Length: 155
Image 1 (tube, rainbow, N blue to C red):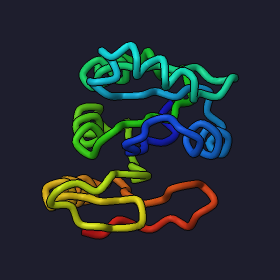
Image 2: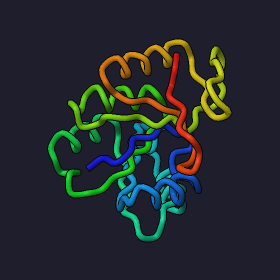
Image 3: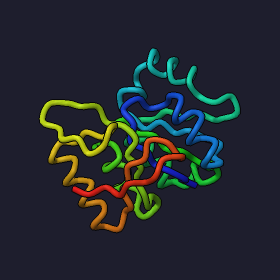
Image 4: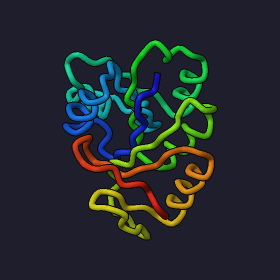
């Protein structure tokens, strides 16, 4: 069962590993990212940041879609973390109605991005993709940590 899907360019770090993991009552952190899936160094770094009592899974976006759609992940209570809006959109659009919400936690400033909050910077294309998700009934919100108030994403 997917408890939360979060976009965070840092993937697993203190906020994810402690705040979100504990507040959501999950047992698994599922890192969905093509680069991490094939980079042993990044995998090792992420393993160091995970909570002791958690299961950690790291897969490419396509392999993650297959795993979620097959039902093999249903037995876990998962926090899914992706690095980018593009990864989130691909995951959500290809897993039926299994993902009903998307938390925007952190996207770094890049060329041609607009600031939507202190931690969210999006291109026009990314903002449009998020608005499209909202039009399909997916809840999209900005919230860095569970103790902060949620801010609904508005393009």
